[in-house]
Amino acid sequence: MNDTGLLQYLKVHAERLSPLLVLTHDYPDPDALASAYALLHIAERKFGISGRIAYGGEIGRSENREMIRLLKIPAHKLRPSDYRNYPNVALVDTQPGFENNSFFPSRRAAIVIDQHTGVERPNAEFVQVDTEAGATSALLARELLASGVEIPTPLATALVYGILSDTLEFYRTTNRETVEQYLRLLRYADMHVLARIQNPARPRRFFGDLAAGIEKSNIYGRLIVSHLGAVEFPDNVSQMADFLLTCEGIQWAFCTGRYRENLHMSLRTSLPDAQAGEVLRSIANRPREAGGRGQIAGGRIRLGDRSDEVRWDEMEATLTDRLLKRLEVSQRQRVTPLVDSSDGQSRQNTQSNSSDGSSTQHSTEGV
Ligand SMILES: [Mn+2]
Image 1 (cartoon, rainbow, N blue to C red):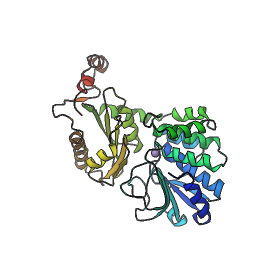
Image 2: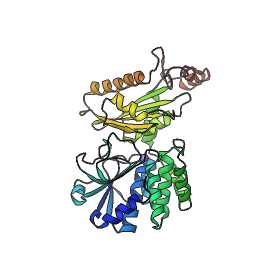
Image 3: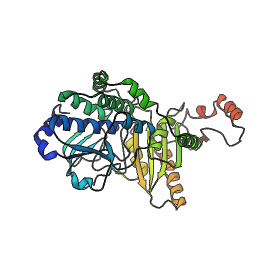
Image 4: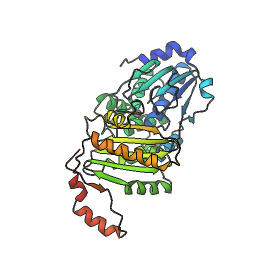
C-alpha cells in the first residue's frame, strides 16, 4: 500500500473530481459510514472537492442510526439523479462488482477504497484494497492523519467506532498498524458519545425479532443456523449472526432474512484461518453474489415475488444442506434447537436442559 497514493491522486485530479459522490454499500455499517465521512472530509478540506455521501438501501440498526445522528454524518439515501449530477463516484468499504451496492457494474469508478477480497481488480482509476487492514476505516484514518487537515471530534469518533465494530473490538484482526491508527485517533475522539452510540435506545420490535430469531435457531455440531424469515431491515441478519456466534461451543453461525425481493445471508466463524467468503459463495452457487473475508461474509440472493413461500422455504433449506456438506458436519450429528420453548413451561425445563449440557456437548464433534 502506498502511503501517499490517495492524497496524491486527489491533489492531481481535484478540479476534475468535484463534485464527488461517495458511495457505500446499500446497508452501511459503522465502518462504511466512517470511511465515507473521512474521505469526504479529506476531499473537501484538503483539496476543495465538494461531494455527497450516499447509500442505496436503508439504515436499520439502532447503533448506526444513532451514529449518524450524534456524529452528524451527512449520509443520504441515493437518488436516481445522483449518477447524473455526480460523474465521479468513490466507493468505500465495497467495490464496483459487488452485489451489495447500487453502483452500475459496467461503470468505471473514480476511487475504490476497501478491505474486502474481490473476485477481480475493481474497475476504477484509483484503487486501494487492503485485505489485511481489518477495517476500511483504518485505511482512511491513515490518510486523514497523513493529510494534516484538522480532525474534528465527530469524525475521529466515527473512525474509532468503524475500526472497533468491523474488527469486533480487535478480536478479528491482529494487524498492528490498525491498532496504531486507532490509538492515534483516540485522543481526538469522544468516548462518551461513542458509548451512547454503542448502547442506543432500541425499538420494541427489535426485541420481538431477537426472540423469534433465537427461537428459530438450530444447532448442528459446531454450526448454528437461523432463518429469520421476514426482517424489518437486512442488517438484522448480520447482527443476529454475530450474536449467535457467541454461543458456547459454536464455531460457525449462518443466518438468512427475507427483505423485499432478496434473501439476505450472513455467515460468521470464529476460526481464524477459515474462508467464510469462499464458503458462502460456494453454497450460494453464485460467485458474485457474496462477498467477505476470512471470518465474516454476507450476500443476497434475488428470489423475486415473496408470495411464492415454497420457493423461499426451499432456498433456505437448500442453503442449510449445502452448508452442512461444505463444513462436513457429520451426518450422525443430531439437530438441536438452541432453546427449547415448545412445551410452554419453559423456564424450568430450559434450565434443566442447559444444566445437563445437552446441546453444547454434542457440539464438540463434527464440523
Ligand atoms: Mn468494512
